[in-house]
Image (cartoon, rainbow, N blue to C red; front, side):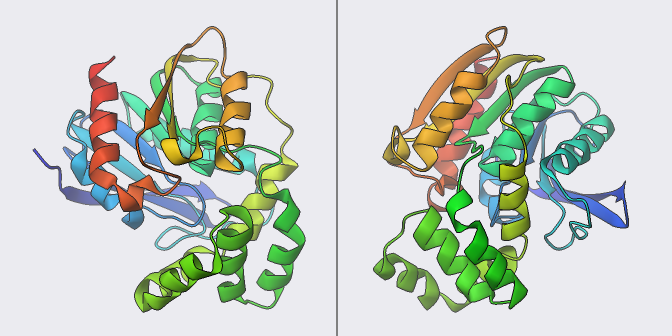
Length: 271
């Protein structure tokens, strides 16, 4: 049965900021916690959340830097994200599984170094030196508040879309406006990702790790090669399996949310 959003939770994370989460299913029941990555928010994951019914609840985090959560604040780092997630996991007692996408996937795997988790799932997690070549241009765009340029840099020079694909995105006025809004933390997040030393080990305290890669990106730069870097660092003490999502790339949560939800349901069964 498709889950529906029940309420929104909010937590203070100190430094004058806060994080929120949209909760689907039974608000107080243990379940799946979802951590979106860059250029994304909880709203963008609503179709995946409603497709997941293998857990009694699905809590989708709205990381700091995107409305209605608070600002990144000074001193923002990758560690900031892991600590924010730790606070949420403390409040969501009995979390059965943790899922992260892209930058959120790395955050989830690092969180599984800090605390015991039954299952951590990551879709195309990225790690240093991912996207480092565009940092100067992203910084220049941020200083000018040129969010259209930021969206183009991310999509053309990181994701590898061609000019025609970007123009298709631009033709959707509301979608393009949403991308510009979501791009505001892009430089700070990518800088934080590349400032953090490469982890020696990931998911050290997870009983099980499931790593997902889209078929279109399997073994290819930039997402597939970063995925391989991450996979090599997942703790040997953790039971690890790799899954390929047929016909999909990095944006499966937007292009095939039902298929991604079905895969997540299957991974719950696999426990």
